[in-house]
Length: 326
Image (tube, rainbow, N blue to C red; front, side):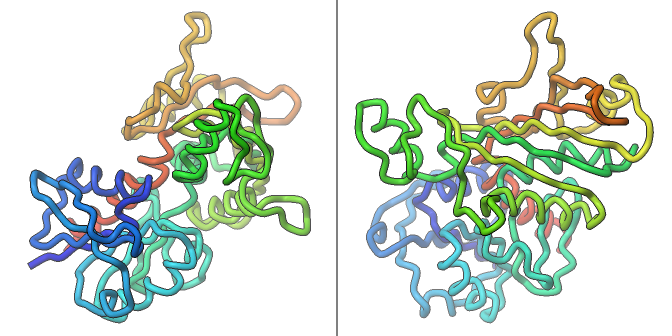
């Protein structure tokens, strides 16, 4: 008997997690949906059956589950993931809390597999996931020495609050989630600022890239920007390779990858946009060109659905890969 629990089931990512359980045909005998006290009692339909949302409590977390997928924020994960783990569950967490812990696996299934130092597995940052999927074929074929990220991140990455700020801002309302208006604006500010002037989001991309690709020698820097679109993130990557390559060789490395869609025909205005990536499982790349100011360096434009591959899809892919290996 296989039991699966979803924590944060009524949130933006949690709702997508439930969709992904169905899309990836996850097999279970028992499904339990948890959320906060204010959402307890709501009903959700999954696979033609109706489930009642339960309040997440310490007592509930001590029940026996085989697998727990979580998307409820760092403080909730810090408290409850160890409780589920102690009760025997494999926990896959979508928050940032566990990602850079030395004994926690940080997983993108196209790139790496859990080593199970602990039974808590971290899902990476949304922008990091789509970026490393695109970087991996370049690393395999040419090596990656350096990458500069500039992100264009949608408001759904901030959950319901970000969506509300965009929608209500269009009506003239003041923001309640962002420090400045997002409607008709862009904010070079995602998460808190650190003492060195970078934000936590930028720091996540820098650190997580090295951990997932298992190469601390890669020089990584980032500027992360929130833009007034509803869904899908775009990342402009300036990538310095370890050995000489042509534009055509770089394009070919993407064409050969089963989880990447090359969309690169500027003469016909063909390049990836957030609308192209919405509700799609693949990562889209385009605008590939050589950077003439740096040796062996290329520009790569990368777009992905932040709620799917950037969050819920990657989480459920991890779950499926573990269940398939059992």
